[in-house]
Image (tube, rainbow, N blue to C red):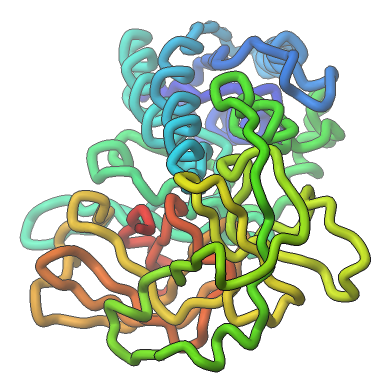
Length: 388
């Protein structure tokens, strides 16, 4: 009997995943990860790791599977949280959930699972895996989850073939309401428990407060860039120029408010600016951490919110399917996603010696350096990279 170690989070998804694995005839072992224990930065006190562990224990007892615990908080802080701090300090917008999957759930966690004799590891992600054979070699395909409202493949966009080879996603073919129904039918304690929100394993946080653990608050100017600025701007259809964020200077606009630190903001942000009486809402369109300036634009159609292309450097480009990697001179039309839950967008991948350009059919709102862009061929996620 093949042995599967499943990450038990104390949520309904991993609970039902464990149940389904038992039904499929696997020997199932639960493994609970303690990755964060600082409740002082979370907005709610009812989502601590102790609560999660309690629910994981109740479900494991109900399913009659053993449950082990492992403290990975040092790894999580070094590989995920420190990365977050460093990226925000540079004025970039990281996605900790993508990093958590690459660095923790499918790396350190796999090592722990192998110590328990695992043949596979499983998670409660809404995505699917398919294994095919090409020229006698096994190739693992990472596919979007069957539930379009819950597809979590984007969060796994940095996984490798080796990591996927060890992975099982038992609920990838199921819709969320069905997962809830199964949990209720089986009397699992997590059946009506709310889904976790916020940063992976940390919970819902006030981001500036969270970041102030390491990044100092520093008062600076919020400068509005008027739409008229773009009327006299020399525009170019050159791919390199289209992929660059607009570089503003202090004299391009006027000071309308102040902020607590440019590194606490992200492009496309509306909330937290505390600017009233402007008629239309204000949005962050650029951040200058060197000068500590936040640039904003009025209204959600402001030109500064949109870009037609993006660039990913060679060392930040990752192919889940190395056999599909584009060669110099090749281009390919694919579907692109730059943030979780964003509908897939039509775009063209254009490799150059310096890296990969993605040109969009329609200008994209809120492209921020540090985000992950992921590209899909139909329902298959085949690669990703960190936006420059």
